[in-house]
Amino acid sequence: MAFNMTRNETAGAFFGQTLQQTSATLIVCLSLSACSWMPFFGDKEQQDIEEIETTEQKVYARAQRSLRSSNHTSAIDQLELLEARFPFGQFAEQAQLELIYARYMTYDLEGARSGADRFIRLHPGHDSVDYAYYLKGLSAYRESNNLLDSILSQDPARRDMAPLREAYADFAVLLNRFPDSQYAPDAQQRMVHLRNVLARSELAVADFYMRRGGYIAASNRARFVLENYPDTDSRDDALATLVECNWKLDLKDEANRALRVLALNHPEYENFDDAGNFVLAERIRNRDRSWANIMSLGLLDKPEAPAPITIVAPAE
Image (cartoon, rainbow, N blue to C red):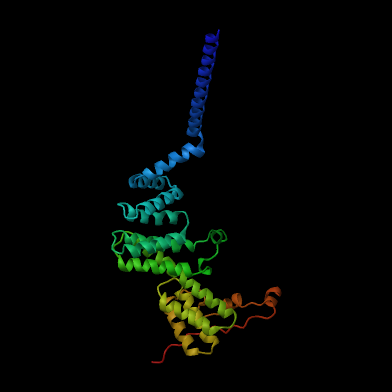
């Protein structure tokens, strides 16, 4: 009996120990299984390992796929990762150029300009440095295009001219340093447009001064257009402004000289009458009308305008 009891006790102890070992093994297995599917543990660890083992070629390939699919935000992430991990790799310089482009496409214009400046400073002899100059100019050019102004059809000459001047200067450097660049023709066309806008902007400021009687300041703006933008569409308006300012300042000889140049180069200008006289009445009436004149439908407080100005031929 004692033998049987000892045997039973031994069997029970053995069974209990086996059950404990099985339970422990099951818990460990369940824990490992849980770690494999729980994102906080398994995926994060696996992702870190993959990030560590990522090669330069893989990162660049991902960036290229993002650029081809126009996913520029993702491309920026990959290109910044490439630049951080492989600053001296085989794709480093090309990645810097593509990063400028991706930032330009995501409307990070300040980032694109600073990236272009950095590339030009670090790689002045690079084969594609002209592209950096081009993107720098495009970024400033795009910054001046306001969506709200486009909707409201506002004249670009009424906007802030600082970005346009920067774009003009950047394109000028590109044409001066790389006249045979593939980007030169487009830059040249944009410069023609920019010159016209900048000239109109100067005349808009001149008009502001004239409405307040600042004829000297207005004439200086008109001269600036004639000296710096003589080949723009605003040359005739600049000459007309100069004629009026000189006439108002009682500088009749200077007014006559400007009028002769205007008649010689722009005989079809709108302020010439059929007899060839220069008529300022309509021009002044549209600009200098007071509230009293407007409310009285032009009957009261009429703006003062000179009689039609006749061109005086120079003495023989």
